[in-house]
Structure formats: C-alpha cells, structure tokens
Figure (tube, rainbow, N blue to C red):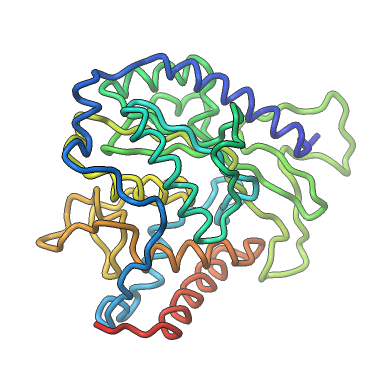
Length: 325
C-alpha cells in the first residue's frame, strides 16, 4: 500500500521530468540580466550575521518566528524538513548567476546541517527547481499539464487556485509521510490504492502509534520543491540576498508574511509592510538559528511541541552567543 523509499524516488524522478520540460520556457535575456546586474557575484560561503538585539528577541519574537517560518504539512499536521540530499537547479538568469544561486542554497544547507549533495554530484537528479521567468502563469500552466502533483497536496478541484502566484517569488512543496514502522508515501489527495487490502492495512497514508499525547510517531519530509520568481517583480534586487531568500524557501515551508516580524529574517526582503525597517542584505542570525533547530528537532512530536522545541533551541543558541549590540 505504501511506497518505499525507492518508489518515492521514482515518483520524484517523474515529477522532475515534468519540470525539465517547462524549463524550455525562456525569459527575455535583458530582463534576466537586469537582476543584480550592477553587482559582482559575492562569496558563496555563509558569513556569521550580527546576533539579534534584546529588543528583537523580546516577548514572543522567537515563537512567532517559528510559526511564520514553518508551515505544517497538510497530511500529518506536523513540520516538514528534508531527509534526502538537496540537489538544486536554477534557470532563467545568466549561467553564472544560475550557478551561484544553486551553490548558495547548498552552502546554507551545509551550514545548518540539512542533507545536501555536492552540486557536481547531482547530475540530472535534481529535486529543487528554481525558475526566473517573465511569464510565471505560462510556466505554471505547463507544470499543471505535465503533473499537478508538483504543486503539492491538493484536490483536483483546487488546482486552479493552488497554482495562482500571489507573490514575486513563490514555492510549492511535495511532501511525504513516514509512519511508525518505516513505511512512507508521497502526500497526495488521491494516492494509488492496492488491489487487495485487509482490515489491518486500510488507509491511504502511513500510520503512527496512538499511545502518546506527545508524539504521533509520524514525520513529514520535503521531497521536491518548485520555486518560481517573477522577473518583472525582482528586477534590481542583488543576487546575494535574493539567493539567501531562495535558500530559506528551499529548506523550510515558510508562510508568505505581509509584515516583518520582531526578529529580522531574510524573508522580510519580500514583505510589503515593514515600515521604515532596512531590508536585510543576507540571511540573518534568526534564520540560521531557526534552520539549525529545525534540522535537529524531534519532528515526530505533536505540532505545538515541535514549535516550542525549535523556539527554545533558538533562544539557547542566542544566549550562548549574546548580542554585542
């Protein structure tokens, strides 16, 4: 009934084939080159950002940060992260900028302890697809034609609304669920069912163990990410902060917040309502602390405990490295 890891990889390969076809949609060269055209490529290494101030950590800043930066998977209701090596591919910019974006994502993944593959070892087996295009609607229409599962868990009647692009940069996530006995399946609204079922293995998704209020014994994983950037809405942005923004979208299912939180984040780069706060120029200390905590947390716990554990880990990390501001 449930897909093994090998079967999930096969599904991922089928999804990847669909994305590679839409890569034939090219963007106007001049517009693509206008992204960060005034700056040289920065270093790929992740430099330590300034620590947050006491004011930025005050009150519910850390819990609010976790809530906005980690959306629960629909099937399990728990937080998701990568458990397979990340292999990004970027298209739509100049070759040098494409390569930098992918390399930057891998550098951030390595820095926070997320599984990743060295770029030259990915070959054609990518699972993160980033497209810069001046025709996002056309690209997403092609994605739906090839395989709407690339848009993540949704019912057929929801496809049209799910594929709508409301932000300058937007991500869609394919997730999987792993059960208490190691069984695993892609999260989809209408999964393939076996021809024969017994009363002991009914159901469409892996089962947990109902013996604890603190743990479901089920976990969610990210297995494929599609990110589309509307070139007409990101022209002029520097490639450094833009790449860090894409790294955050790759490593976690973040909400598209309309406002900046108390604790600064690279996700503020695209938030329209941040007052006169200066936009970030790189991934922030809050971002890195959050991602490190996410990739160390027990994600078989119930959602409130997952979030609490991550925010507590963030605060401990900041206390170990107190602010100098």
